[in-house]
Length: 92
Image (cartoon, rainbow, N blue to C red; front, side, top):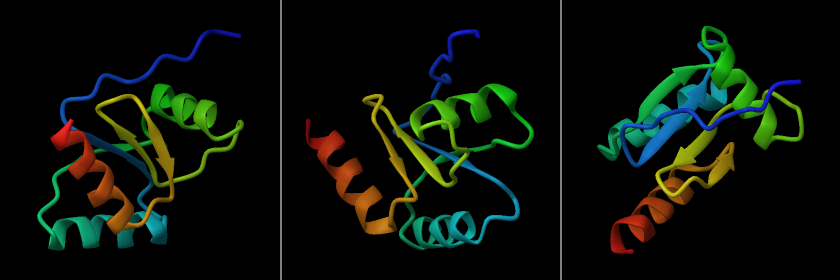
């Protein structure tokens, strides 16, 4: 089994999603309303991203999974949890 690497991120927040996930759609809608930027990666079209998501979720492909610039992750976070984490990162 090959080692899973953390995907390259270009901003403070990367969201791993699918097109059919209602939780992903809701989180993106709320983040968009609050003008919170993110990079989105569809795990169904990126095998490396899917492997990463599985590696941080006990082998499960759970979306949305958030990856922050400090390398930490959150599984199915609320928009307020994302905002709080990003504020903490900005203040660090």
